[in-house]
Length: 388
Image (cartoon, rainbow, N blue to C red; front, top):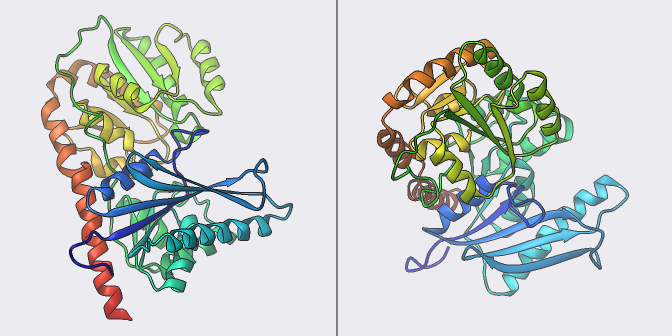
């Protein structure tokens, strides 16, 4: 370990991370990295995957991003998937050795998602370093971790120093696979520089609902559209903004037309975080109708903006929302969702925006989560020395 006068050196190895091709991929991981950088000397080593346009077997690109030294690795895909996977592992090791040759060696490795936990654990074993794995993946509650993927998860978690799921519910689903590890829940982060209550409340003729999501079936958008179609038969004093894109967007746009909601539902596509925050400040109510969520970062972002939330009683949201911050409804139930929206349209003004925002600040700020990780880093390093 480094001298006490120096910061702990942490190498983050994420499975998902924002890139030029996909700027929204793994944004929640990026927020974790930034939170830890408040208290530690942080480097990111991210394998972006295969790219057959590069010369040679791999390519390492290094630059400073948001003040954080970042190594991005790409490798050439092989015709046999197993060979490609070993090339992925090998490229991580090559990039790690590049760091060592440059005079930077981590005190601890922090992987994000079990797939990155595999090379992190291998590096930890080879270089005698403790490893923490943060888990976000909805594949665990969805029952998708089978076969080789289950082996990877078991290998990564059971050989890690500590496993940090982002919610109790996610930890429960990991344990259901028979995986035995040291668990410590650490939630996701909200960027309070972007997400904060509006200085002045905008007045609208129609009350504004908002959802922000990757448009796939697990986000439950059809149930939201059905709920609004039923609600429109009773009242019409609302509109819904949908921010996000995905493979099912066209299907949901067509469904909107079939349900006669063209004048009520508006699709805006992917927006940068700055624009998402503006949508949230302008909204009156945030709605997340997901069928599965391990956490729900958009929930705490909306709450940081002082907005009451309607979400499904699954996974992460039911560990975040209480009576003072919103309403929980059963997942996959358009009728219950309709009733909640109907109630909230008449009562959202009774929710205390500053209290909702303060609730989030106290639990999910970068400083709060960064300190939690720093405490875990120091404990892991102390314990690791004792276990040697």
